[in-house]
Image 1: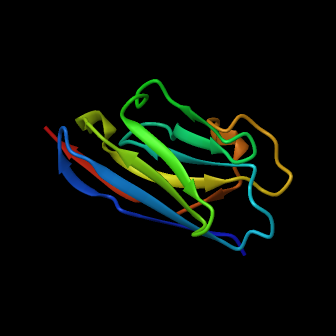
Image 2 (image 1 turned 60 degrees about the vertical axis):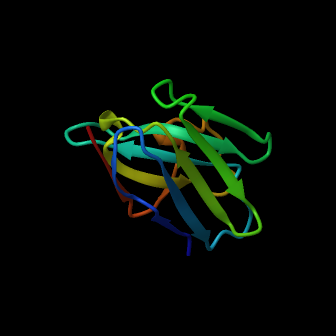
Length: 126
């Protein structure tokens, strides 16, 4: 059974930093990609960053490019999101996601994913 467990959220002031972690378990094969999404109050869930494990490349949304860094530690089966220069508009519930085996898709798209964590809250105050 696939499980994704996020941690590391919290409350920070604008300009601060946080590092989110997503511990993944239950995969028989390494997912071809994994991603971070967020959903702010009254907003739809949007892609923030994703990591293509086969191509070893990353994709970022324009709103976080240059501030956030996604990384994957294969030895720990853990996906990270380092967030710097946080802004109040980054306030949201952040979710880790992974696709079903043999899936194909553009990794920043929500529709490319089948498994979701429970989320971790990030609140940025001005």
